[in-house]
Image 1: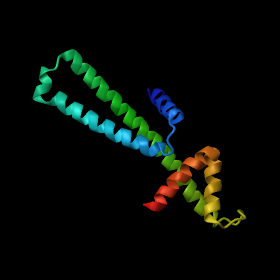
Image 2 (image 1 turned 120 degrees about the horizontal axis):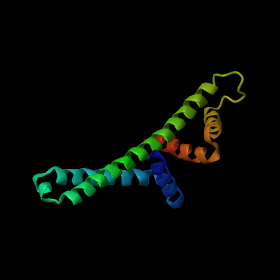
Image 3 (image 1 turned 120 degrees about the vertical axis):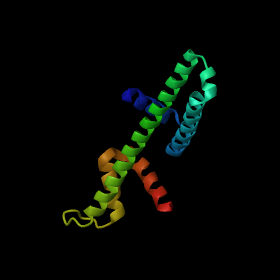
Image 4 (image 1 turned 180 degrees about the horizontal axis):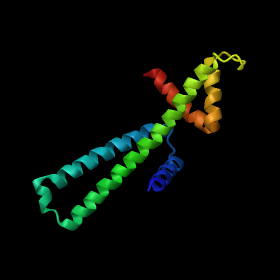
Length: 135
């Protein structure tokens, strides 16, 4: 099940033309959570007893799928954030290491990000760092 969710997220990443995919994904997840909560409230309400059992099962299945998607997205985001944070910490630690020639923190962080995931990860992680600087 986890792999299906990751493939779905990968497909969204590939098909997405927007610059800030993560922000868009977070907005979609927030909306999905609201829909799932509303559907759950309807199914649990007294009016939900009037819903035929077959439709109620489909509703519960839909809520479960939405929740699985939310968990998958959050795990994906947490892994990216964890790698970014590790790169920042190691980059700062590298400034105290006498074996490393440069004492520039930004360069050390960039090098660590590239070492962890290449240029593609560096591009993602750098955007996260830029957003952290703004907030």
